[in-house]
Length: 84
Image (cartoon, rainbow, N blue to C red; front, side):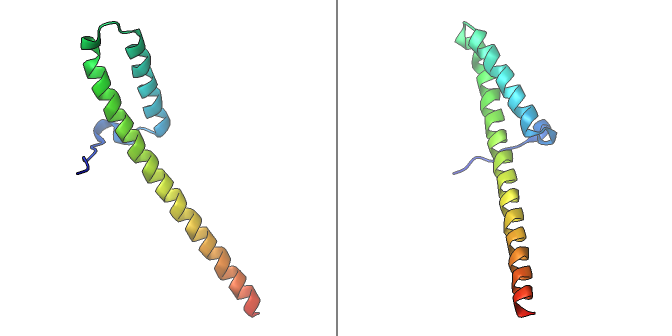
């Protein structure tokens, strides 16, 4: 069963902003010596990763649909030229 990802406050952020935020957390985790203190940061990083994946998938799908539409338009124009 897939978990639903709630974007919450991160829904308005771009992929670049989310990636920068994730990188900051990773840097903090690398400096942290006590893993018990890192649990919240790890959980936030996992949530950010899921959000980034979801946004990336959505953008990729949108790009793919846009490309399909453009290819369809090109085919229509080519067929119209052939009929003339």
